[in-house]
Image (cartoon, rainbow, N blue to C red; front, side, top):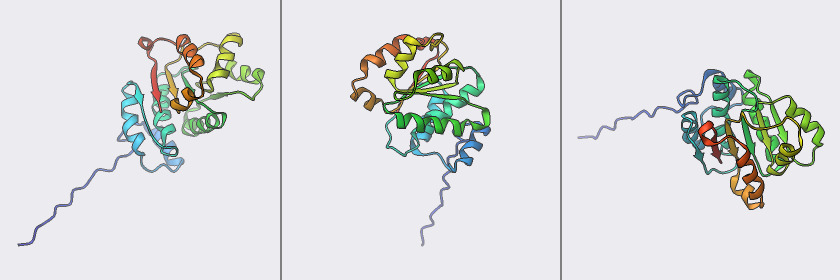
Length: 196
């Protein structure tokens, strides 16, 4: 008697099945993202529930999408300026993250500002005065603006993301991060922290 193997169809995970709305699913398709990566499958549903996340994933594994998609989706539900802050250890990473946010948010008109050293403070002050939705910053330069740029604050912030948090802390930026944490709204005021 021959054993009959039943084929078990595993349902393919899609961005839509993770809870991502259509307009952002379309943006994923435009970027050539066919299916969510492991970190995206694990992080997106949790982030969409408003829970904190600490994620570990390799470079190139889709980490930015794992935090950008939930931030953009909740921004769609509750549009406001100065919505999310992404802290990052390097200029290069800040610009890469901004490109991803702008590509994913292109259909919804998301505005980003990159605030890092090596760029004129005045031009950055002008960007901040326009009240972007997403600020991607190095901790030191962000503190400079919080202390010196008139009218700039993070009172309306809903999300704090520390990308490559281990590197931020290895660069002896604990003092800057502590200052930022004291300035932003407290957890009870809907701050979601994603550390990837």
